[in-house]
Image (cartoon, rainbow, N blue to C red; front, top):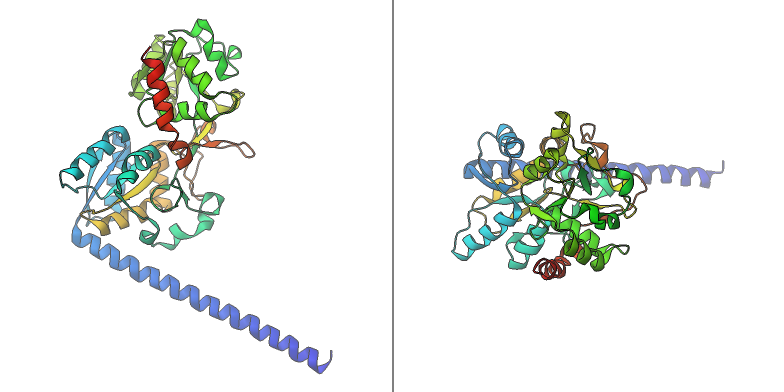
Length: 375
């Protein structure tokens, strides 16, 4: 080796070593900065002493969110209120109009966030509140990124996504070979035999109607014919819908609760979930109640930050998926307890119904439903 080449080789190694050293120093400094910011935020939250959290109903959700968080941070008392997003969104806006700002953070579906709260400027941006490196590291998340439903990627963070099960059936009453497309639901034999999660309220009923409306093989014509001819009964009560099914009162439930259906089936009752792959048109990817928003003018803003970060850790997401039955978007959270029917299949394409473009369609869809159902 010539002397010049030897010197160049030595210089290159020194440059590489210096770059690595600077990177390690920078990473260490960032980690230390995050640690200090986190400790400061937790101390401020503990001084506030309270978190007002609104979210989905159910004792299992309360146990996961409120009790799970308070176990991790015993100095912060959790005031948890569980209800549907269709009730909590309007209630929160009514309180704010009266000058009452009582809520710190909300976990619900994206329709409540995008359609009700965001247009009224009730939300704070999320990215500045994310502190923990295990939360902000994109390698921990599906598609190497934190997912947001809003176009700006600031106000509504989606932490869960799963394939919505199109229907549940009573296998004593339905031969699945007769239903391979949603169009098959128009068969006169199913008239008066179908019940559905209420499509006029935020939730899986409206999200399913949105999927039909936006799907090229279905569209507004299918929506108009289905609701105009099949005498579909609506309910907002997941358990009631599936109890009707096992009782034989209805043969098909559209947009069923997978969690409730799985529990009933485990008891030996006649209920089968029918997955997206069974239908020619497939299904959609939903967040369910798996999204979170920071409420502005919050009475306990530091406690809200602590809960937000905790919820997005592996610990928080593990409790979430066990309580709600959703697949976490975190890659290090197990899916083994989930029915494979809800887990996205590699290579399959799904409509991301939680995105703003689809939520914004819902005004047109509701107008169409009101028109058809009024006849």
